[in-house]
Image 1: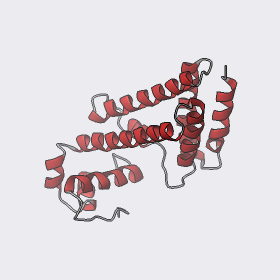
Image 2: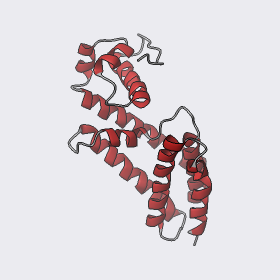
Image 3: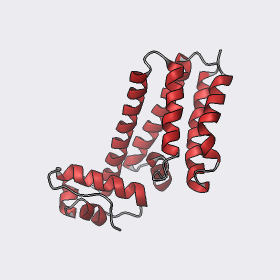
Image 4: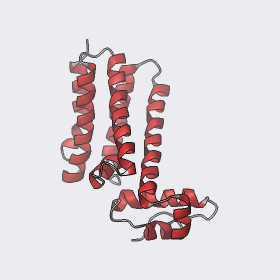
Length: 195
């Protein structure tokens, strides 16, 4: 496995390890990548990796925490671009997610991918995944309520499931499949719930 990541020794080892793990886990899968490969891609060794992370499981959990934090920045950006305009934020969210769906380098949601790979409920990453997904759904519900949509909770569930399904569809049947209709379907759903 030859990672695309270019390692710089000026970056602290912990950050190099996380960058390498993020690249490798996303491209190849969590179970397929061992700590040896992560350490090598990070330009370090297993001893250094274990000095920063007590186990591969803890490394995986931190990788997912970082991704969740990046998602938080997307929500903040939507609020900044459309202050006080919940419907505009919903529309911008649909477009933002469609951008991910249309990117040929993306392999779906890394947290969903991790949930599939890590079915053990006691894995440290499971709580990260479950908390993230619940928060995403609640953010959608809050936007739907703020937008004055009818049945905001149900609308949020439908938008959430529409995105999850579009991600899986794009992975299984390609970018020309049903996932390419995500924005249009989402807009139609939102329009049908306007008060």
